Image (cartoon, rainbow, N blue to C red):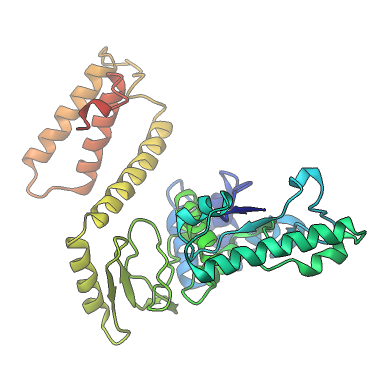
Length: 357
């Protein structure tokens, strides 16, 4: 018998130009194709999602078999787990309410020291023995599977269009969803939000008193949405402190409590550093591609400076602009950060481990 944790793999993602094609298809509804520009896609799709106009035909028709979703699951009717390719054993999923150390203890045949958990392990061992004995006695896989428990590991491939993935993730990251479903869907949502933020960034999982699974480094104020209105209902500090917020709180009161928790914990800061660095990376890669890597490989049409000299000139110019400005502007700060990263690349300073204490 083997116990594993649930996991997922994104087998394929949307093509690079799909967002542009969604905009093109969507604008046909409004006959506003003339407003398409190189910078219009993100704003247009965000407005589509906000307005609830998710029936853009391209999203539906692009997917497999023209269905909203397609599912293919490992079949216990045809899979004979007594065969060598399955290791002559059954594999089960560790429940999300078990501790991380329980996994190693179970697989090394150690008692967990918890009556209920040990009962669960014993039940699975009995199921495996019964299944293998029935197969050995001549039963077929589809007959012997009648003794298999709900904890049996299975694999499923899900193909769906973007609209349906939004529905799936909204339902399955909800606080009322099964905790084992949320265990898989929450990290999947985070990854999709990183890969296609314009499509998934507005989906916020629910936190409530009866279900406090973590989401990222910090479980922020999150909620259901009714016609776009956020209802803040809870904050979870992953160090173990919980702050419950009543549904009677106003958004302002709840947000104030949330910020108070953040102020007492470096988890909020760590999450923000991670978020800023991810967004800065995305912006730098976009600009580097847009300008043809000109900072590190200058065209030298007028200036004959090398990359180091060219970047230093840009830094001087940007610092001068910041010095003379009455208000620090976001774009000046971001440009400065970008040039400093490029300066590090030009100097081949790619690692900073020597500065870690």
